[in-house]
Image 1 (cartoon, rainbow, N blue to C red):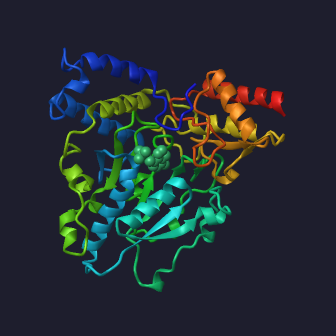
Image 2 (tube, protein in one colour):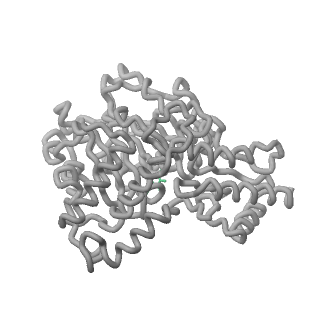
Image 3 (cartoon, protein in one colour):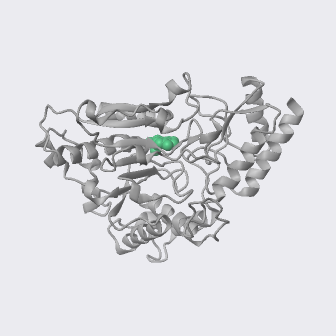
Length: 406
Ligand code: PLP
């Protein structure tokens, strides 16, 4: 049972097909999928089909483009800021000396890093919410937006170029709209003209998303979608601008590989993309579309979202175990924002007992449950390819471990 936080398990059916296609791809007999040109009709079909499947799964509106980029989430921390900065400079015909604000909701380790990177590449990164301050030095929750520090626009008359947040904080186990939660991202607190950029790396394709509310959604593949090496960007068309034009308005000179326009104009073939990774992603997307619909009990579940209830079911089992009343396990995130993908917790007995827990789990074949090195504790990542049965096995192990060690 693989509970690593990413790269993480992928559906067997997709991997088996991928393995066979490495030796010989049906459309190019004798040549494997990793051995053909990215400009060949066979590979073009892979991308076209993957885009179609993703559009169906997430009901992506026609005025959004899908880009397959490289460099992981970390590169998108810079790319989202640089591209939206350019869009804003052109739209407002700014002068070089004009500064541009961007607003970041810092709810965990990844959005904190994104805000730092935004500042590095030239935006005035302002925190509209500071989770560390809220949690007394630790990321642990997100209060209602009425308690955030959203600036009054009248203060300086400037709208921010964008609002940024991370939908699921992988390290800290904090998710907007997490299990049993009413804390969805507060779109209504922000000017609808200001694009929202969201990092969905670790909860992508785990529930329906109203894409039309976003300017940009991006997700590194290596959790729910495929192997590491590719990052999906879903972007509203009108936000795609020529970065060189923005230089006239004080924009920076940006490496061409970071330009969403270059990627959009070339159907993500600006350079040689990671063809095999994209192919595996296409198989995972196909398997998601083919999987039988599960009970859709969440209020916003839509019929084309076979997984919408699955993550709730699985994570609820783990959280029920944390809340069994014994206090042996202690969840690290506030109940209102508990992640459906990365439940995180501590053992009341301390770090030595946590080490024993990780070792005992591993001895039972449950791998990768140690917390992120920056925070310690336990993290049980349960992405889409982790089955309900596997989660039940984990929970049975947790119960047994508690009985033996409390
Ligand atoms: N954002 C989130 C939510 C993540 O979980 C991660 C990595 O785990 C990243 C960004 C960084 O992604 P990468 O390592 O692909 O740059």
